[in-house]
Length: 386
Ligand SMILES: Cc1ncc(COP(=O)(O)O)c(C=O)c1O
Image (cartoon, rainbow, N blue to C red; front, side, top):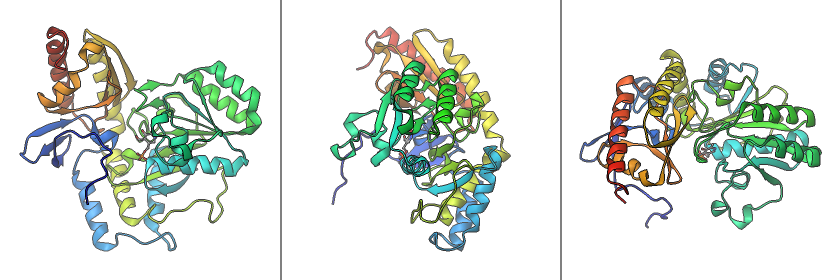
């Protein structure tokens, strides 16, 4: 049997990782400023993470949600503390799409409505409602198409007001990434987020913050929405939560009353996944990684703004987008092939930086130096290498 070929891949095989570095099968070292797509939050093979998972595996890897699982309560309690939402409730699942799927469904159970507001350039996942709320017709199959999703322009307060004035009583939820990831590191304005909060409150609709990519400490606050002082009704999370171990979740406001059977999953919240997630939160807390993300992010953003030839630098903390002019589009490729640095992309003109939250100043400087040399090189070659 061969693989179902859906991923465009680099011709590199990563065989091991340590901290912010990964190594290929020939032991070539790469600096990881991509974090396997914003997933690596505490660095590769962190000793505390390895120990927590190994100890748990020796004890019990899995048992279903039909029995008491105290480690889930331990995780909920620490997540409540670190996210500063001790009164919220945790439902565990396995991925970002699933987290959004459950959030949208819970909102609809709550107010018995069907319409969902989503925004241009959004990405919420590839399952049924999540992909329907994703602004990318290429990955939406005919069976996913639904009139229940209404797309509005991102950061357009007037369009939002108009939509609520026209159909507010039908709107179940508004789902937004307060910093769009795949959409190219676009930051929602505080005014726009406040308007969403005001309108959802006024119409008893649910505010869902998709924090799958921008959450979990990445932007220098636990949730990216925390920069605004606004509270969402449901926060969805996944990527950084397990540092690579598949786990997702939703943090649900106390106003939602659970009932048996409302949500459910076989694998969600299994012992091993909870051990991984607890290890991540413990490291985030003990090593003050949210503060580190804030400081390292501010440093990188400041330094990046000094380079000539960049169109725009956007983002917060360690979620950074560098918009390049079209003739510099080979910078990303040069960083990988010549400087051995992994970065992410959005379209062909935005480089996305999504490193682990514990990167050091030395690693930030290594990136900046390499980036500067690639910029110069590509600019002087006129057209870039491709
Ligand atoms: C903002 C956002 N939401 C949801 C998802 C979907 O997460 P997953 O791939 O774990 O289903 C992603 C994935 O990139 C994402 O960036």
